[in-house]
Length: 315
Figure 1 (tube, rainbow, N blue to C red):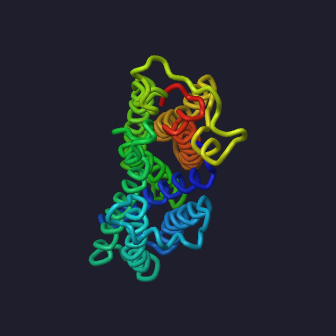
Figure 2: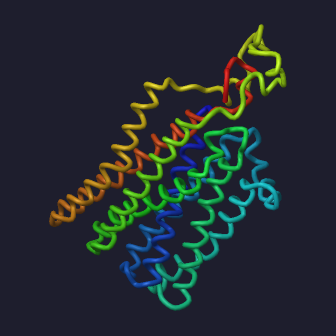
Figure 3: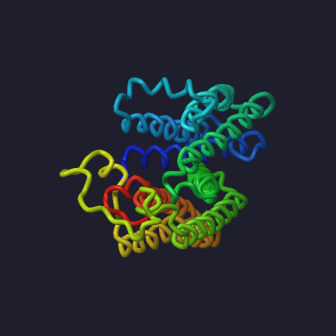
């Protein structure tokens, strides 16, 4: 599939934002984060800013962005619509939680309830985003059992590394947060490797013969291309990345997205400030870049079954 930059930014930014918002909701509710106005403003500003810019960027991939509001009306049958509904619903408790943190400088009591609701809404929204792709049977590498788990794990990873960095910058670092980063990096890495192994070893779900219904006649191959020039389907659905390049990018995604956060956070635990804080910021930046590369591959390595009509032998 064509890896559109707007969709890559949407999925990575919103994943980071919702992951951070979920953790802030839990940390605030249980008194694990400083309740001062400055930290709340910066942390919630980053979380909600990433979510908002991510959601807005997703409309850039639409032919008519001004009609994006219509998507929320199809929530009974569309995961895209459910994602839109949950994104809007989550703003309410998140805004209330932010009001308590930034204005009243309190995160307990009713404010804590709002924070936990925002955390739950964030997790459900990320799941809905994952299911937009996992529900598409026509794209075998997306219609995969590991996709929802990967999206949730990567949201937790990017959210936790930025939470750790922010806490360190405000002089409120916790060893528990460092442990969370290490655990999230390990789990996300394991899930990503499981996904890559699954798609690499999966048998094709369709061939040119099965797509045309002519497989009983023997080997089937097209005599002529269906078009004399590249059309929309070929551009959007037929993007291909060379296997050697994909392998290099996988190693880079694993290094920046998982290995650096894991090793960097372990090393930071042994250091005192300001080195611990500086390393936490480096870890957050590295993880974010690694997830961008991972998400580019997620789209680039996928292949729609429609490519069978444009020269692909199997999908």
